[in-house]
Image 1 (tube, rainbow, N blue to C red):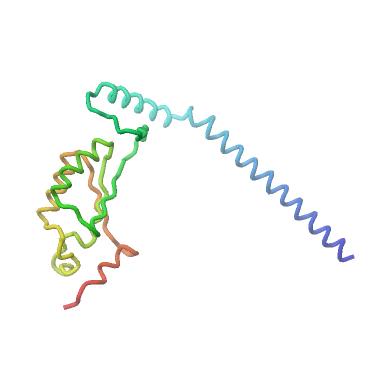
Image 2 (cartoon, rainbow, N blue to C red):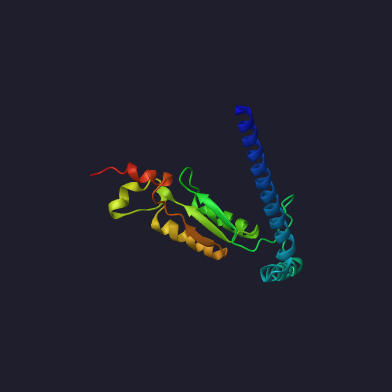
Length: 173
């Protein structure tokens, strides 16, 4: 009698597994169909392809050397942000004069700059800054250099979390 109950339970589980498998397969097939069929008919896709065609015409007419070796150039229309982490070995300002035009020529549209202790904090946070921190004038120069290369600057402001730990190094006076 015990064996019959166990067999019945296994049959019931197999039935639920079959139904679950059927539903998963149908969801996957529907999502694949939706992605292939409806995407190319959407307004977003049409606008995206028109912009891509305009960019191809602009790139074909430009006289700049755009040979980047084996780098594939695609038609991503969003912001192309480069993350600069300045806490470990911060570059000199003269390096940014060379770096920003290069990044812009490679297609970057903005910079996410993570200053951490390299930012020139003042008043109550003055002790947070590193001894090698940039001066306020150097930060202004970095901003101007980025602006000359048409790069958007997004300062990464550490808040609560892993990157906030350097604030706890502040010596209380």
